[in-house]
Image: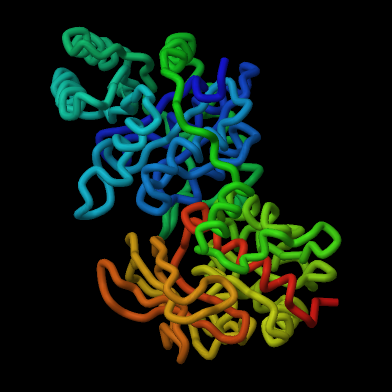
Length: 472
């Protein structure tokens, strides 16, 4: 079987809250426990669900976001992530046809399903309805003829009699029922202000939850029929995404001139990447791009490690929940000092959202690294949405004029919200400046997928290769 014909399914729903994550994660775990190599994917910018997918499959959870990366990259990124897999499962986002606000189908689950030529299995919240479920499924099946809605999994079924009524109703819909899961709160995953609690914060409980989800799915779903459906897909004509080739193309096009894609092995700069429970948000392709650009990528945990990895010449601090760990992050004064010293040396530091807060003077009154002249705190207000932005000046991450698409998702504020040299000028949907550029530091609330702009990784590595004052 060629790489383009990887068996695949998209797990979607009519709306948020129907149980997509429950069903998708349970299916991933059940197929993996049956001996299949399962590749997990998530539509949209969400970082948390892929953590559960990874736990279920033992492979990196990967995002497929047509807004951040462009529709043309969806199939290549999918093929890259699913290489060597027996089955790929793609969890959708929101409702099947919901996409970026005001952009039609862009970044919707439906669009991704079409780009992947993958059949869709619709997870329906069947509580409080019986015959109406058939009308709902009929509407979704007929809305866009290019979307192949090939099966339904009934979720939150109240009883055996309720399931019988639902199946009778679905008999006339023309869409087969491939599973029915009864209401059961035992395998739930706890939530808080930005969604599910990440796996890294509750690993033992998460392992147990995923195991229970697998058991429920095995008992309630027709795994053989689902796998047979996944195997009906055509071959994709696209070539898999390749980080080295992407960096080389950026160089040839002049997009990332001087990005450092030619850094030789003996000169490989060490770039430390923050992880652990406080910094769980990152795209798998970022580390792959850094490595392809010539970096040695080494993870560290700001909650546990008192020093940066020896020889650190660049630093990446992604998103997460530092507000949940502000006292512990603050208590690790040696690491805070090491981060401040590295930033002060001029070494490149890329910080997104949680990283931005960690570099500020304080978070909810707790001292942070003090790299940025700003204070941060939690609020009740949710900031959420896609953004378009442009780099206003040359810096360690982006050349002046570099245009990116990003995503904001936080309940914190930073005062001030921008430095004398802002990181980005936002151009859509609002116009404002945001973030900080100072020396080698680039800090912003904006989450950017580097696969869409590989020159960012190349430029960071080149800056690290030229940096002095490596951490001791």
